[in-house]
Image (cartoon, rainbow, N blue to C red; front, side, top):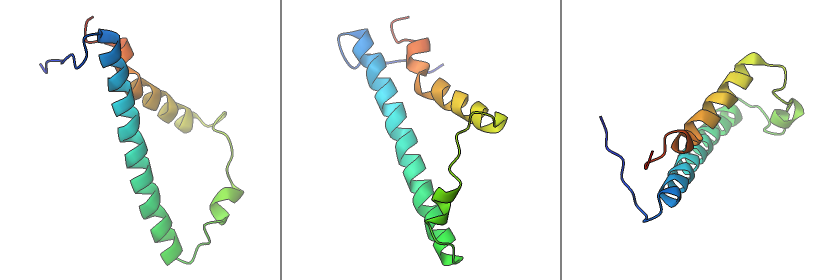
Length: 85
């Protein structure tokens, strides 16, 4: 089992830092994948403006709702299982 480390004297600060790092990781992965996707689409002749034409909310799509919930769970795992807990 992996051990958890307190990086700050205040456990809450450590947990908050874990959330920030999780968000930073998600943002980097998304940006990297987006860059690749846009490059591939441009090579196929698609205008990137076409991507904005169908930007609908995920309110009624079950797959997107599940993905959203999984994202929230990953990012806020530090609050669910705090270092000092």
